[in-house]
Image 1 (tube, helix red, strand yellow):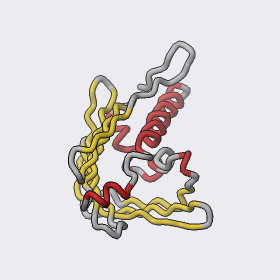
Image 2 (cartoon, rainbow, N blue to C red):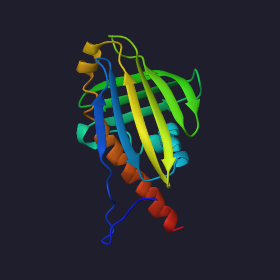
Image 3 (cartoon, rainbow, N blue to C red):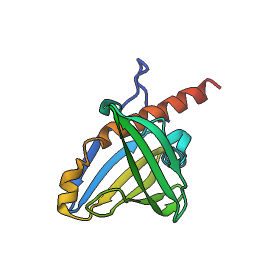
Length: 169
């Protein structure tokens, strides 16, 4: 599953981010794991909570509710310092293990739609994360690319830890 060098270190894959229009951002990354497992890491709360929050942001995930089905909703509540914030939305498409679409409904500027595709090749998964913002200003204000590389590094590390624990079972 995870690629390891002779010294045991896990190889990290590069993340690319590209604006494809004034309202769209596409992030691509190959992660070291099969699509089925990567999809589960994205859709099962007990797995999602172990990698999603960027460690450098100083956030604490207080709650994670996910009803992963078409029309189901999610709600993530974070603490940062002395304040809390919530992210929430609705799942529009859930096609295991290849596609997941959800909305971000908490923004004042309108709804952002995120589509993630999971394409397995040789035991690895090519992730394409496509965000469609309601406006150019919403994309600019989101700081969208900031956390994603770190989150996907954490996903790769999480997948490697699962592989390592499976090796010791």
